[in-house]
Length: 121
Image 1 (cartoon, rainbow, N blue to C red):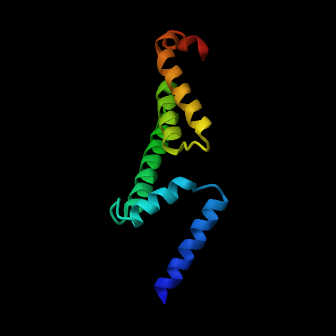
Image 2: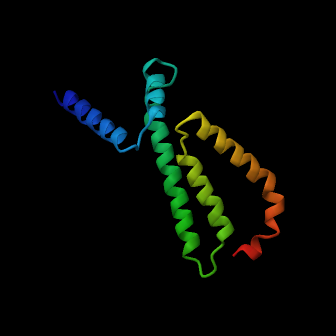
Image 3: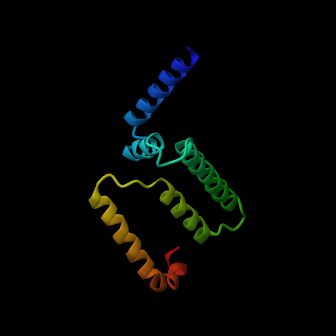
């Protein structure tokens, strides 16, 4: 009885998270891997816990940097990019291709922009 109530509550929560766009098709893919045995039981929970702990660590690191008398904005930028990378999910193949192309451009342009960062502030 309690098991069924918890399962219903979980299903309601997951449905609401889909409705608010907090979850997407990736969640279904992870869940189906767990259900068909290609992933260990508890895999989805492990992935979610890993995401939460990484996000918490990054946010704490950003907060610590921003509380310094002299803020290292280059390091803040690195951490913000990590945070964006943790939560980015392309909606369509074009979004994925665009993100890949942007990442390639940024990697290529790093040597050109590092010398001008001082002037961009």
